[in-house]
Image 1 (cartoon, rainbow over the protein chains, first blue to last red):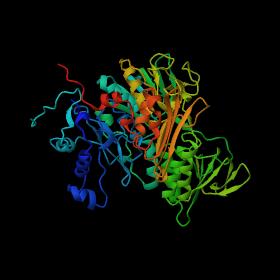
Image 2: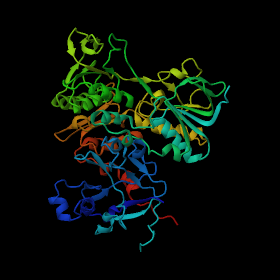
Image 3: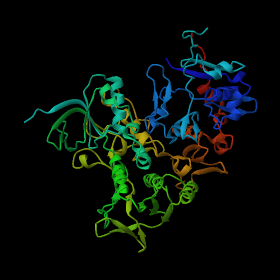
Image 4: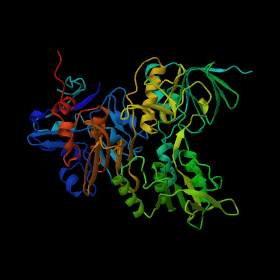
Length: 157
Length: 432
């Protein structure tokens, strides 16, 4: 089953911590201060914040089942895992043509212009749970199966 | 006489469309025999990457569109470097140049396009190339390596995507390039005037010479039959050692000429990607398929449409009916450091269209509307949210009430009606 991250707009206060922790997670040092201030090339967060008055939410890759980015990818760098449903990028094969960006319904793909590579949420592969979800102080983010059922995979309570 | 080979699915063409088809077929039919025929000797590779091959010698292994074990894993037989001589539709067979016959139950024509080379004196000289296939890039690479002491100069005929892509690769190789474009600006088919100007500025900054509103009348060779200069339509001489003809591509329809298969500019297909002859399908650059902006069949020779059209063809060939959602012109480029995307219409055809635009140092955004629906976009610079607009166009969302926000600085999903972003981003209500 495909997992994805849902927002709960009603309790999001736009603190940007999801964006911040994503950037830290993608950094060399994994250190918050270093990732933002000291690393020569700050990593690009896979999360975008949107705010308008009291309404705020964050946006990242929704691991779409029909994944238009995978269909549009010129090099074959993007693929969707048949079992997990994760849309993944092989950065060796990404050439930064940005065709994926043009077809993403969420504007969820970011540019690492320095390296000419696309950046997207991979649900923090290797972590128990995505860092944005873990660090959201208001529980405004939920990682769940794409049919909306709560994530009850092993090791989670 | 040798016994004819028989397959369930025969695919002619081994690029985006053909691969899309076999991937779809294998999702629903693990066993039916598939054969792919291509006159190119290579496994499917990303065609746009031939520029990187030329620029930096990117090896074929890292240009592959699918992993090296793709054909084996999917049990696909290949006849690569082989040409089909003719179709025998009555007998549901193709005849290869070698004389071999291959009989099929379902046929896909994914033969792509052929570069257009206009009849022109000197087009057969050494040093004249097209630039749409890996072997073109290899040929140019070999030709350039013959220059040891001098730096060659190149003339690129046509300032479209292929021409500009070749120009960037050549510049990276240290070759001075002059582009000759027949119309008044580069990338005039896919960009509006403003975005073309941004690209031209970047090209000129990189040292590329651009001559617009002219064509090449003839190419003149030296005593060895190698390109020495090009003569323009006004008599002007442009000295060069290399000429790239990048005027455009046309559907590669030779195989269907004279058959019952209906051809307009390309092979006409319905929403199932089926041609006018039963069991024969077509997709990609050779096909004239549904365009959701124009609301009619049209050529749209671009990679993603070929792949998606191929998938739809594949499902239908395997007996799983489904419709092509339609494609439209759609391009993304980052030549010479300028990120530009465009889709649908880029210039209003008449005054019944509404143009919204916004330009500042960081970006240029333009959205075209007709009757409150998005029918085209051009984004340059910050292009990350262009996909939101593209999908409003694809989904035919009425944008009249929030249209001004589409090109605003703070545009995002949040600018759309609440029910749109909520239904996409929030968890659906629990079902008992």
